[in-house]
Image (cartoon, rainbow, N blue to C red; front, side, top):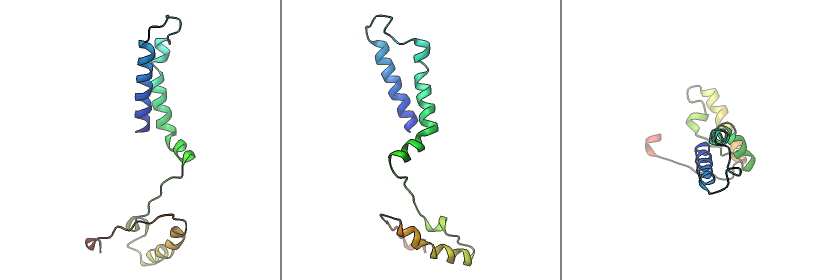
Length: 102
């Protein structure tokens, strides 16, 4: 989504700049400026997660059926005992419960 938004922004900005009534010497070169949306797309597509984590902490989600082994009783016990470390570092906790789950 970030790459698409960056491409859209660059395309609109480029269209506005090209559409202005400026002398030809001040307008961007067509063949070079046409590459700008593609470069912006690739940049955000490749580096968005790195940029996002630099700006704010990543969101971590814990789902017990996926994060705790359900078939091996020893691994299941180890996973349950490890929950305290995960909860110790959590700021918020949301519990979604349903009768069908059990």
